[in-house]
Length: 454
Image (cartoon, rainbow, N blue to C red; front, side, top):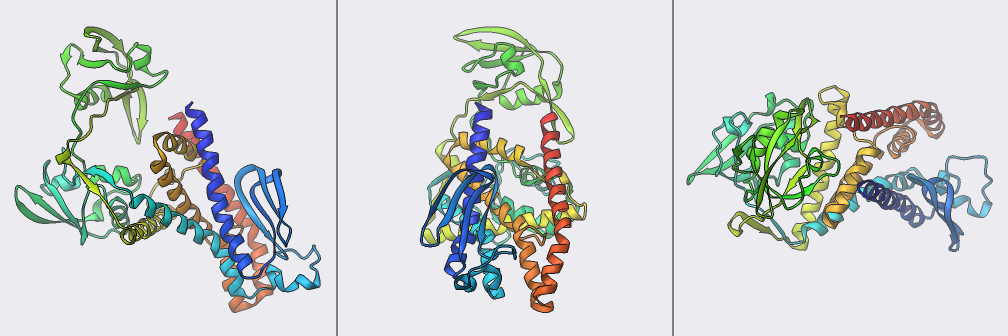
């Protein structure tokens, strides 16, 4: 079922985002008087097609769902004759500003899509955990500044805080820029101003989630339990006949105080047999189980393959976030901007070898995340679509031939050197562009396969 969800979630995501991207080119082209010949979602032989409209545009869905295109009259081709009556509607006959608008519309609508999604989600009432630190590790960044469990975060720089993780993208951007971060923290009734020096924070292998742990942004834990809600198929727990509804009461004959203690004892026990006390239907018995070895970053940790029952936070530990349309629009713009700048900075750091190339994800990883997101619910899946849409927008604006950014770069050359030189430069650079794209895709697939083996 997980594989089915991944395939369905991936194809649905690609279909939606390709349609959005190509619609940007399509809509602006038609609004600016350029004749569109074909609107295709996917490449290769059509699975479905229809010709419609005064211009007899062919709409098609093709077999290979890894992209799409809008074919316009006279676009980069001198082989097809252009009727004299339609010459003024040919793409290549348009002034630079029109061509630039049409090309930029694809990435532009990707960003607009993300803004709308974040705005829509932002208008929903959302229950979140109050901005109070949980069990802060002493070795973490804020732990070394004296922040302890129970302290409340009031501000990040000049930004008000409603939840502890609210400004994770902003914090990641600040760390990548090596800019200091000002925190306002309330501790036992006293308000303190703290400064995080980001210059020494290691960034080579971090991502937003690992960064927040490194900083020490640990939320208060929900009410504890060791009752099992889900057992992963094929996991050590399933092989030991542990079932949903069981409660783990002891490990190696010592009573368990909670889920955290279970994790602390299982994590360093990869490949080592453990004795678990299990309570089922009022009866207690012992099972032998050997945690599987799972690689997380550079470490190998033990995993049972179980998920606990989640007990909701009490009302005094929750905050409801509500936004009106204007505030939600600002939230959407801010989220899209911060994610876009984060991707650009990460790409720059990868080129200069300051962050790991392992941060590049390929279609296998995207499919896996899509499958998980679609199972969790519409809000998470829509957030996933918005993030991928931003990534597509940024990547398409890179000045690489074959991408929209490569076309826009050629128009800049055309402004200063003329159309003939710009076209010759674009054609000459196409093999390099193909090589760069092939290299990027190969690296993404390599990372995906490496994660599978790990």
